[in-house]
Amino acid sequence: MSSHGEPRPLTARRAPGLKGEAHVPGDKSVSHRSLILGALSVGETSITGLLEGQDVLDTAKAMQAFGAEVERTGTGAWTVRGVGVGGFAEPEDVIDCGNSGTGVRLIMGAMATTPISATFTGDASLRSRPMGRITDPLALFGARSYGRGGGRLPLTLVGAADPIPVHYRVPVPSAQVKSAVLLAALNAPGVTEVTEPEATRDHTERMLRGFGAEIETERTPGGALIRLTGQPELRPQTIVVPRDPSSAAFPVCAALIVEGSDVLVPGIGLNPTRAGLYTTLREMGADLTFQNEREEGGEPVADLRAKFSPNMKGIEVPPERAPSMIDEYPILSVVAAFAAGKTVMLGVKELRVKESDRIDAMARGLEACGVKVEETQDTFTVHGMGPGGVPGGATAASRLDHRIAMSFLICGMAAKKAVTVDDAGAILTSFPIFEDLMGGLGAMFTRDNR
Image (cartoon, rainbow, N blue to C red; front, side):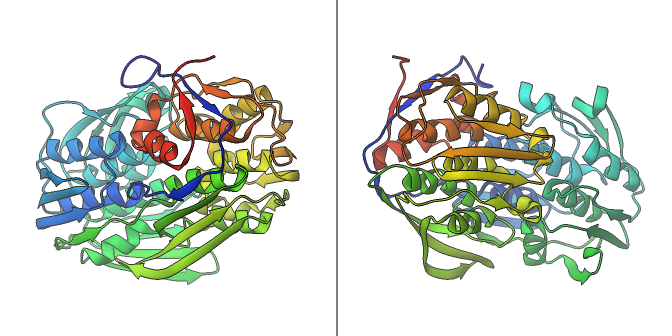
């Protein structure tokens, strides 16, 4: 069942060639961080292009609950009047983060070094996800947590009364863990050091610099060493949120596998820590070009043009690329199903603990659609069937996971027979205009299961 009501089944049928421009929403990672850092600043931060999906709206509500003034002034336009580092007030009610693992983990980090308590919960998917990887490093600052078995939500976090700076080595590649520690370090005196053996998305570091924090990154043989000096006064900013590369992946990949397609996706953020999917697609032989490359708000941006690519071939995706495309493996596995040969995705165990076990979810759904797959705890292999070769004709379980739902709808647009998603409601959490946007390009979605 959808986290916000009854199940919403949706069926995708084989589409004619997709044409036009796809104006995808703002970047979800930047949107979350804009609201949180705006709330930790002194003064008014102005944001345009904010993603207005449920995940980000839940973060906005949380910042209000902690005492910031958050106001929507127009479509994608918001202002945040912050309370400063260490200025969070204790919320009067439970903080419900819905489906957002990013939201809850970053918010926990932001409050962990302020002497207040807050209780966090979320939907069924979020309540099943492990929080120990966040609460363990936050405990080093002096925070305490009380949750269900495995550190799962609902969970109460008691912020440190006398926080101390820490030296922390991130044990698994996770921008959420790294970012939570850096946000906690803001209200700890002295210098906190975070070592990151494998690079992950660096939006938090970029935005902290923009807000005036003293933060530096040094490349060492053991990975990136990030040093943050605590207790700064963050300066409010004017933020233009780039369009989300993870959302752009869906119209781009649909164009690559639907015969006759030619789609332009303008203004996409191409931060190198996020662009692994597009590198991979080009290696597979995708007709994908970057146009009008530029920089906006410190982030590289380009317009992506994707055309039907009947000559794509399966490849081996190296494990070191996983952090830069961890959210895109579900849609990549759909593209792989329409390529020739075998695509092997290595080092993807992090997919097991996302909104769902995404390896299992994609494996079962692709098998139902007639695609041969293989999996281990840390690998996923798809045996491609070539352009238009996927039989389809199945119903895939979304498991309350927006990316699973969208991936199988894209699959249905190119398969021989229609593909139904049992519940598309979770799509609203990250890409609320997905159905209308894809329909505008030529997708054929229906609410019945015939």
